Length: 344
Image (cartoon, rainbow, N blue to C red; front, top):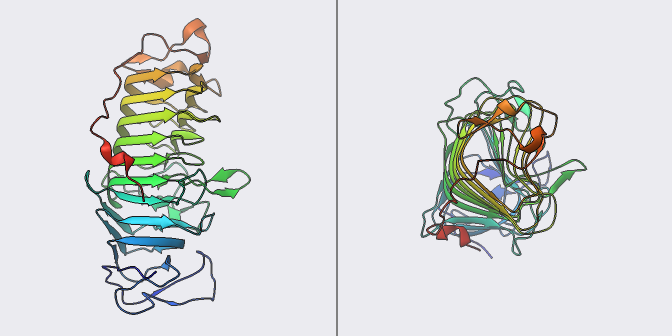
């Protein structure tokens, strides 16, 4: 089915994946304002505006200097599935997701099952301990620079379901990968549900995120590495499927990110907060329920690397893995977050 597009696209070249395929067609293909019958995929040569219902059939790439705008209520179905189906925002490009509480944007597979398709990858020019122009694990995207206030756009009221396709034997896509995304970027009211890997992962950068709903992501709900030093305010995390699932995983250097008002609930036990190497951060108002272990310093990091409500995260018995004491905060009220239940 052809789907209407509010696109100001003169011409773009489409590929069956983000590689150098010679099997190309012109985009919008069937005439002005019409997406080709094989759906959204390829590299835009002009700014792209999506407003309606679409099929995502391959890698949709927004290159340096261009922007992708997705209007409120837009629904994008990842129909082909697999590793080559994802949306990539290059360093120097911008994404604007203009959802509202009444009309969020939804990007999902039909059944919204774990690992059905890739996810959303956003690359910025902020700092990362991995260096400058780091190569991301798919698409050959580069990320990282020296501008902590870099602006990759804004994302508001976005629901992602069924992400996390397997990239290789050791890694999968995240629902959203924030790669050196700067503090000039707005991220508010995001749901990632049934992801095959992490809900969101921060690879360096300084971006802040507010109001995250992360349910049944099969690795970590919130993951960070490469000296991310941003902030998460209001995150509700829920696990009720069997498998390895944690609320947090921090890795490598501690750049002291901040977390405010974090609720994480599991019906399948497991570990809530895991810190590798010297990672850590500040956590205020933490509510955990249902975990065997509240905290795990996997590589014997110092308790002082994690500060909860102003205190070192000392655990019962002085061990590096166990239950937290005197840290029970107030559960986050998400009764007004009805946008999180949107579907295709």
